[in-house]
Amino acid sequence: MTVTDVYLDAGDLARALRADVTAGLTADPKWLPPKWFYDARGSELFEQITELPEYYPYRAERSILAAHAAELPPARTLIELGSGYSTKTRLLMDALGTLETYVPMDISASALAAAATQIATDYPRLRVHNIVGDFGRHLGHLPGGDDRLVAFLGGTIGNLEPAERAKFLASVREVLHPGERLLLGTDLVKSPSVLVPAYDDAQGVTADFNRNVLRVINASLGADFDVDAFAHVALWDPINEWIEMRLRATRPMRVTIPTLNLTAHFTDGEEIRTEISAKFRRERVDKELAEAGFTLDQWWTDDESRFGLSLSSA
Ligand code: AVJ
Image (cartoon, rainbow, N blue to C red; front, side, top):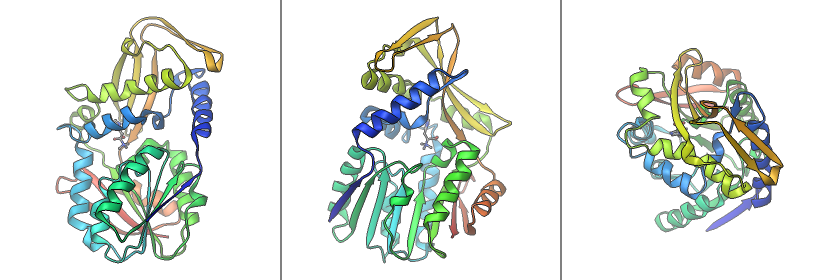
C-alpha cells in the first residue's frame, strides 16, 4: 500500500528554483545549489556516477550497510531523507525485521513514484508513505509513530555548509522523540589523489552531471546557457576539508534568463560554485551530532576506512 503526501508541487519547485538562480547568479562569486542537478537526466547521471570506478562513496557505504545492518536495533518506521531511487535502502529493509512503514522524502515526485512501484513489488507487506518535500524545509510534516529510524545516507549531509548542517541536524533532533535514532552516512577525509578523481572521473560523467544544472535552468526558466562552453572543475579545499565542484566559463558570455528578467555576465574563466561535498573526520561527526543533541551509539566504517556510518539516539 502506497500513500503520497505532497508538500512541494511543481509551482513551489519553480518558485524555489527562480529564487535560487536569482540569488546565486547575481552574487559574486556566483553559485547554484546542488539540489537542482536532479531532474530525470541528472538523476540518471548520478546513477551512472555510482557505478564509476573512481566514485568509491556509494560502494563503501553499501558495504558498511551490508556488513552491519543486522546490528541495527528494531524499528517500526524507517524514514529516509533525500531517498532518490532508494537503491541502498533495501539493505535496511531486509535487516529491519520489525519494519512496518517506509517513509521516503525527496523533492523528486517521479523518483519517489518509481521507487515505490519497485518496493511495493518486492516488499508487499510494507506500507510506503511517500513525502514529496525538501528535507531542509518540511521535516515538521514527517509522520509520527514510535520507534522511528531516520536514515540520511550517501554523504548528502556533506552538500550542506557547516551552518546549514548544524541547523539541519538540530531540526532532525527536534522532530524525534527521545530514544528514536538517526543513521547518518558521512564520507571521510582521505588523500586528494583519491578524492579528486571521485569528482572528476575519466569518462566525464561527473562533468556532464555538473553541467546538467545549466540544462535544468535552460529548460525550466528559458535561459540560454551555452552548456558546452562551461568546463567542469573539481578541487579539494584542504582548509574546509571539502570537495568543491564549479563550472568555469571558457569565454566571456552573456546569459539571458527571460523569466527572471535577468542577464548574467561571465568573464573568461569566471566560475560558478555548484556543489560542496564535505569530508569528515570521526571527531567532527561526534561533535556535530552532540551539538545537535544526539548521543552516538555506533560508528562503523568500510574495511578501507573511506566512509563512516553513525547511529545515534535522540
Ligand atoms: C549527493 C552526496 C551523494 O556529494 O558525493 C556525486 C553527489 N556530486 N558526484 C556527493 C555527487 C558529484 C554526491 N551525493
